[in-house]
Length: 275
Image 1 (cartoon, rainbow, N blue to C red):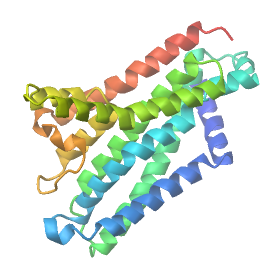
Image 2: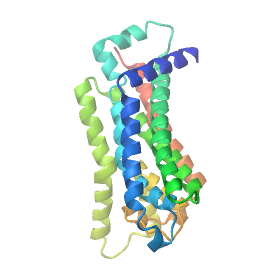
Image 3: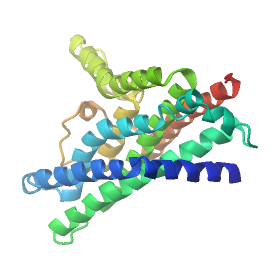
Image 4: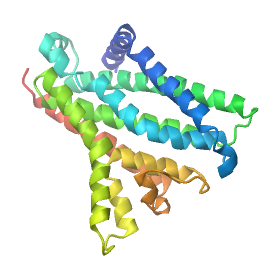
């Protein structure tokens, strides 16, 4: 565990040196504050508090930004060091390949956590100030921040899987961008096409809802819609899902499965990979 902690510290220092932490905080915080200020208008018309409105807005924002930030952090975590020769040097020390992945992964998780807590947390403070100290909806906002971190962890694990499979950094970034497009854009378009083609309405709402669990970004939307009061209308494809079909425990377990599978697979592949 000491080796994992030392490697984690090294990656955190690299994140500060490369300004990943500062850039992520500014990006998430700036856009979250902007959405909060713009999205505060509907609160009086839909009878909802500002924090719940912000959860809806930030959920739509996070499915694009969080996976992108996670991929940018992780796509070259292993293949980049392999190309530069530092990975071979690192493995000459008394550290296992699994510890290398756990150390780097923990550091990137910490970077994401800092970005979300400072960026989204700062936006929440501004919302509360604008609402004259009204913190109603704060628990939903905390759930949104936690689920955003879990979503980032899933895409970090996917990024590590990509980084262990490919052999060149340029290939890794191409595959990561392709994966981002599939999960964030193309999967929902495919589901929408299925709904349009299903003119006989043979696909039930429950089956459609279960299909959405095949995509972590849609699962993230369902998770947050489950916590929000029914007075807020959803404007995404996830609004077609039956949010009452899943309990929070089931959604959390699905999140864990999505995280564990690519991470375990990345460790297995990396352990058998020739450097």
